[in-house]
Length: 98
Image 1 (cartoon, rainbow, N blue to C red):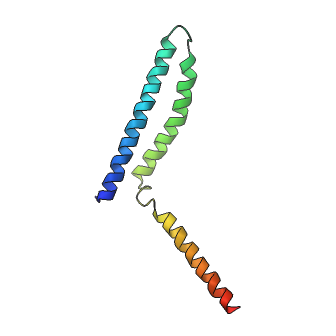
Image 2 (cartoon, rainbow, N blue to C red):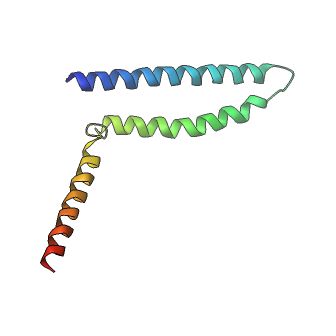
Image 3 (cartoon, rainbow, N blue to C red):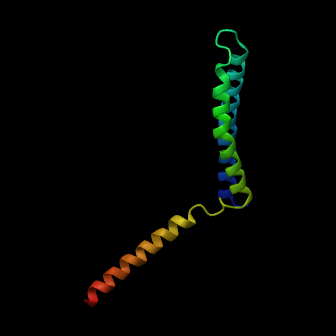
């Protein structure tokens, strides 16, 4: 494993831990709100909304990681720039023939 891959992997883990911690904190806060008497049931809609948004994203990220979709994230951008450069060279060449 290269140094760059290791750094990117560790940064991804750090982001997931921080975001997951914040998410869990918010879930605990909502659960405590649901158990409270002042606004009973307030947190139920928020928890359902968070889970409905979070679970598909989590599944999509896990699928992408497990199938290797994040191995070459810069490749498509580089190919696009190469194609653009080739098209620009082709235009310059076709204009000089006219």
